Amino acid sequence: MGLSTFPSLSQKLMHHGLSPQTPAVAIERGTTLQQRTVFAELKDLPEKIVSTGLESPTLLIIGKVVELSPFWPIPTKQESCLMQTS
Image (cartoon, rainbow, N blue to C red; front, side, top):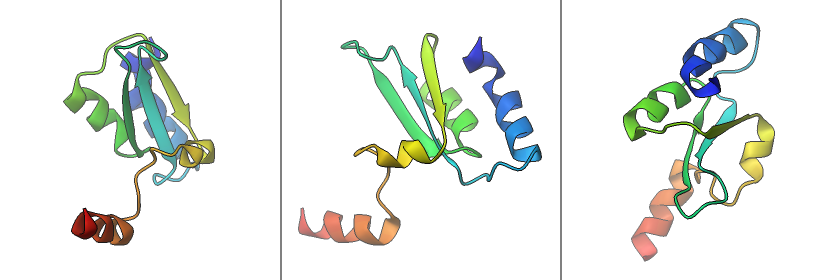
């Protein structure tokens, strides 16, 4: 249910003051071998969920706590440096 209503929910959160750049993550089938994880800013997550084809059960986490994940995207400047040395 949360996954299908997330586009509307994210719009309402932003309408009521949550920053569009708020970190967010969708975790499909968490803790299983089939787990898939999609990180994005709140404004982009609904589109990324659709483009990656995530399905229920999916856990949605929104807020600064998402930045604590070691898998949260690295800023572009650092990412380009890491790519050059690889």
